[in-house]
Image (cartoon, rainbow, N blue to C red; front, top):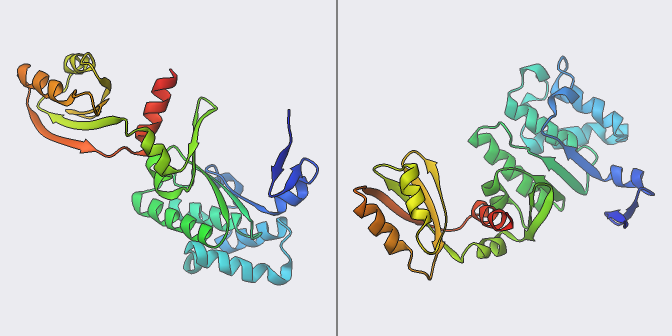
Amino acid sequence: AGNIEVLGYELPRYESKVKEQIGLALGEYERTFQWRITGRQNLEFFSDLFGVPKQIAKGRIDETLALVGLQDKADKMFMEYSTGMKHKLAIARALLNDPKLLLFDEPTAGLDAKTSIEIGNLVRKLTKNGATVVYTTHRLEEAGNLCDRIMILDKGKKIAEESPEKLKKLAQETEILQLELKEANDEIISKIKRIEGVKDVYSTAPRVLRIHCDAINGAVYPILDLIKSSGNRINQINSLTPTVEDVFLKITGEKK
């Protein structure tokens, strides 16, 4: 039991006030657009639906199209848009009512690296302009690069909420080694896991192992000795800086 407030308004009492100040861009967006009209016409339809005054609607549509980089594609049919363009139009739609709070659900899902970077740059621009963005993603590296504060959920429960920098400090109790071996099989993984101080071992690619071990325990040298004595060979070894993904693996592993 308790009260929910959004932007200072209590729900559900001031639900309409809250809706006026929220923009929403969902990952499942395609079915909400009309395919046989242009991007601009879609935004005209939604601006009317959102109650944007007609005297400012055209200027607002032009502004949002320019912000997401679709001004030159505005009069193209929606069905001819690429996946990245459709994502950008969904964000433009979320901006039509000039919201104070933006909710983005997996905005880069299914996008190539170039378009994902463009979406990330757009999010940074929006926050610099004063908007608050709640951004959900399974891409933890993306969250670490974009967000001022990260909440980690595991099976629907909040297990951590901090700045990216503070979260990464949680993982600095362990040293992360990445090894590329001549052969990385279940037997060698099992043997490494039995070494004192080793927290976790998993494969990230063929012949590549990532090993979490106590930084002060001295587990690194026993690992190297084991690999050498087993007749295996290390082709490459790297010490990695903890990422938000490493923090997630550490925290969720400790909870189990």
